[in-house]
Image (cartoon, rainbow, N blue to C red; front, side, top):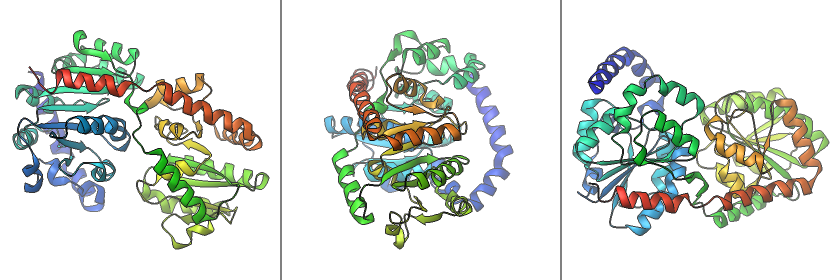
Length: 434
């Protein structure tokens, strides 16, 4: 009955939203990306890779979630190379990030719309043995139809923020039968597990599996080598680089203001901005020019002039470049944290041993952020003034920077272990579903 009600509401919403979707389709390229796959039409080449009884499906929303379970995917493939993995994402940036990282026999895919007829079509073509989603990817039609076809379901790295829990609590009567379809629900923290249990998840299937985001598979030696290459390319000597990573609207302006003031006092300081949405680059260029600074795009031929000019700001206008600039940085500000959007994953720069700063809005990474603050492994700034003062202290003391770098790296190394635990759960519950 609940799934019928869900489909009625979903179908009505889909019909009402058609004009909006058509507008986005014609005027925004990212809405056209993967449309056929979103509607359940998978290419012949991808279908040919599917192996009956030997196909596992991993799903993540975008880059952040995909990077969280990439280590799990990679370890799984090393242990079970005969298995084919379908790795789906919802966003175009997620597809662009994961596709080149997959083994040649595996299948990148846009996640289908959660419409009954679309999911039916997709599952008929892929027929996975198991399906593994990450964090809060709950899709009722997909889970219901997959369970009916005896496809084992898992949610790993499960988390529920305060806000999400309040919202889901209002429809717990609907979520309970959906969560009961899971073979395993592996949560990041005991608090997350308690919230899922309160929503109706079966107690015997809920575990605390730790945070897979601590399991960073990045080849740090390769990133450090790339950073050395960039230093030579830019002609760097003793400059201290501040990177604003995955910034959102409002944050670039704050960072630019701080930089404009601090570069006079600390001429060795340089700023790199990596916006979360590259389509905002022209807007950011204007913000930089408004402060009488010079914007230089990473894709431009004259990018090497950035380091020589203490009045310039380097703007990353491509995808997938941020890790190498984290490696180049001394200081990293985590975007999406100063303007109320939930924060970004700080583990990658932490694993690289960087000084990490973030704003007060880290809801999406609350447990990790609190742990870093408790261990003095990161610094929280409430506003622009506090950011400026904190940067001034760090720029004035190399020993303070070194201390913060060391604590961040130590904390990451101490928290590893979620990968092995979650892999064991997959082997136990998903490779041979009952």
